[in-house]
Image (cartoon, rainbow, N blue to C red; front, side, top):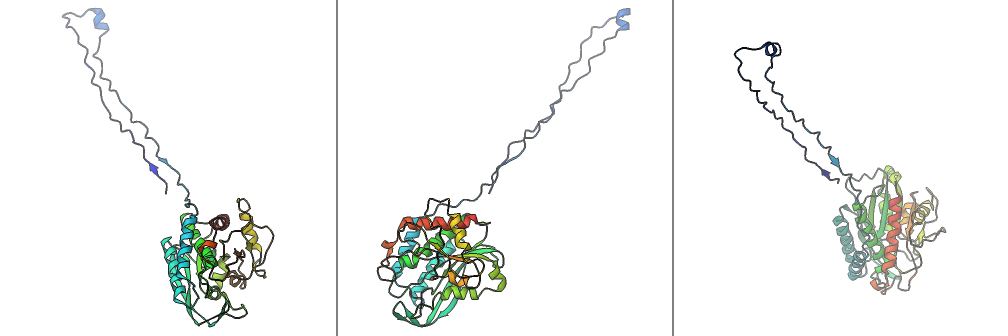
Length: 339
């Protein structure tokens, strides 16, 4: 908001000076000279003080909004909180607690948060049998958001496989997403941004083909106008393991430019002191595939291999604060490039 500084206006007063009358000595017999050149009394001459020109009001230009820097410590605190909940299979009470946790963060950042419930089937998740049940997608919209007008989606899943506390997979992506949501509220992007925490991303089929239930449910809920309005979607999935670069990949299928969004993200990050591989890569193991499957440009950021993947060892110590910051910087650069 701009600050208006009002300068005082000088208010002038009008003053009349009273001129003294000229004193004359009486003459009993005026002479010819005095009769021919009479000396009239001086007329009073008022002195007028004109009002000063008012000084123009000076309006300071409104300073553009600027987000506080990416707070990697806040991200790490959230990762620890989620990992402390323990394994978060989609049909579990622990998954519900994780959904409530991220919903609270997004509401605190100023978003209107809605929960979209859906059911998940029984199956086998990473070698462990899991029951049928229900979970939610957590959808955060900025004030005044219209899903039928152009916007982008940033998403991350909050569930885990049954044996993992999921610090890297995927508390890392979820908390980076929440921090970016805070930054976008403070400094809006060129397009509105919808943030979605997806439930039930992890596979529930023995062959790994039945996965991304939450994002599939989300895109199925969009009508045709809402689908056309999504200009792009990025999934943040496993973004915190130390690596030499930040992977940005597409799902590798057709649609509205399968690799165009990944290329745009890499281009936006080119000016950063953050290594981003420039060559195209393909990754189909996250929620971006649900968007790409209906023709929405989508990409995945993350997916660096690590020894604790899908195991009880996926704890906060495997997450690197530098990689979290680099991942956040890449997505922020893309969001700033939108127009």
